[in-house]
Length: 512
Image (cartoon, rainbow, N blue to C red):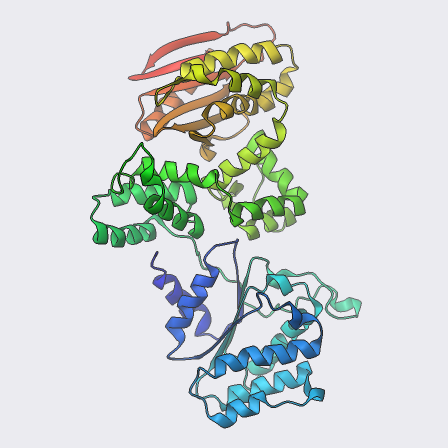
């Protein structure tokens, strides 16, 4: 398990000790519940912790009376684990039916906080399912009003309230009061913004691997391995844990490895990513669901990945805000970027599946697949030779503006059926734009790097070769492929395939 003790200490120093109310809003399976658990362990000696969850508690929100009664019962279970005076617990449990109101609930909480020897922290997990419920919003309004009274010194109340979920409750633009003046007033507007980075850094991943290595002594290169895991996950907690779980339990059984020790390497990480992308998971199911719920987000992701479109990053944009909230988008060099390489590849596969169900290129690649495979090797020269032939046959007379946007899409349409089930690919985000794209294919542990460009003359082509050579150096590869789409109607450049020795690298150059 990754050591998150430093993150817990940061939360304590920056949020708990000052007495802030806040919400931990992060994407699905981002370690929110784990963080709460570790936070509770850290604080339990100094504070009284009341930790509850709204998961499966739908009946709480049938009426205000049900909520007040149900909330009191949830708190009672927590109080029974504390060394409280019996009279305090008895007083908390006592209420008349006509006292099941939010006002009385607030008064009971104030009395409990006054009678307790320790300051009380309320933790509520899984608030998403209730976040748009009017009763829940009224409960948040109670917390807000009591917090303001506490700040004015009028009465005791919870030292901290911490909510966790995916949706950002603080920014709910729902009507919680009947008068128009407060139509967009958030019931959680007293909360501090939670800015702690909950992703795992390469150093934190390395700490976990060091602990594992100390137990099993596999001889892993921890620095290289942790950086490879981070390269694919960008530290997304579930993805990091899942890769390590697959390496430990499944990937080592692959005939490319053979034992548990040999799988803890960059090639093993790539194999684990392939396993993950080919399997069902609640995280990927959530992506599908959310893209259906938010078509504007679906469209933005599509244009970023398939069209190379660039968007300036601003949380004032509702679509960017939603994508960031779900953990799909992030800011990178002031622009919108996909959060990690695994999400990118999953989304590529999803979009291509929807777009290529009746593709002649995909059908041709599937029929010819065997001729591209030799043992464990992929004959990329042959792949590009046949792609050029089919591309010219099917699309040679199409409008050039159409092709300039879709050349990358068409190549991946042809590639996917060839490597499907054995290899996988990803598009390097640093080079993805409307003029240049680098695609890295992993097949049986061997990497193939292909750069796609638009033909703009020989001088620009020479620059492309140099860029590819630099990129091959960063991946410790000696061979690469440069594919240029020529839309010059005068056909000043003869299309074809040739091999070039450039700076000690062998480059197969294909002009289509």
